[in-house]
Amino acid sequence: MRIYCTEDYEAMSRKAAAIMAAQVLAKPDSLLGLATGSTPVGLYRDLAAGCAAGDLDFSQVRTVNLDEYAGLDGTHDQSYRYFMNKNLFDHINIDKANTNVPDGKAADPEAECRRYEALVARLGPIDIQLLGLGRNGHIGFNEPADVFVGPTHVVELTQSTIDANARFFASADEVPKRALTMGVGTIMGAKKILLVVSGADKAQAVKAAFAGPIDPHVPASILQLHPDVVLVGDKAALAALMEVRA
Ligand code: GLP
Image (cartoon, rainbow, N blue to C red; front, side, top):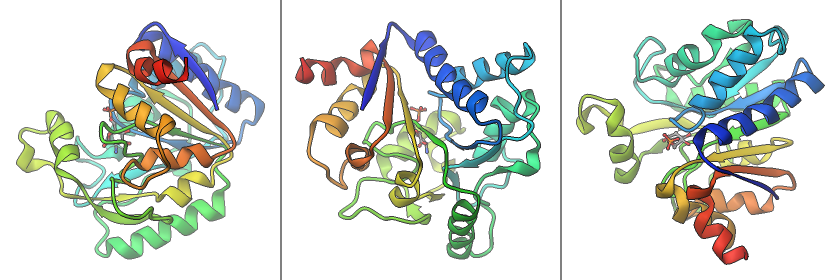
């Protein structure tokens, strides 16, 4: 695993954007696995700036997002489709027909998960999968559980995730209780993983993921088995991991 430890959030965003940009430059029709949450917002802004400057061309790029809330359609301002349009797709020269997010409004969510898994398999392999990290060690919406779930599936969100994401909704009651997410198998199938973390409140999750046992109660710990992981974090988020590796 390669680790880049940066001074702060802005430097983390620049570094991670440079890695994504290098992928697009090296392979203009890359399949990018994308993520939501507050952590990637800066890197998406930097990618959009690279596109506006004429340095990056997304016209052939294809994307698959990790996850979506069940019950929200793409026009809901807290849906992950809306997030992706607002934070990235509306600002780059990508063909939106080449962007994919699970359909949170699908009448049969299980069937939608099967469709999405097959779509990733058909478009894939994912060249680079961007991930954030939940405070409880989740990746995508793979929550702590007794077993790792391989394919795209429907998940019940934990109270800790509902509480963490309540800040984006009018109240915790409005946070959907279920989501559709790529499974750890879908994620591990990516050729390269780029995990971005920022802030002291992620430090324990980062340490548990990379300095602890591989354990489905810390879903990100499965990444220890991936041959090409790049972890980009600011020093606050990496502090506890760096301590045990020193
Ligand atoms: C959400 C998303 C994850 C994301 C995580 C952390 O629950 N499903 O993909 O990594 O939260 O979000 P943040 O970056 O806002 O801390």
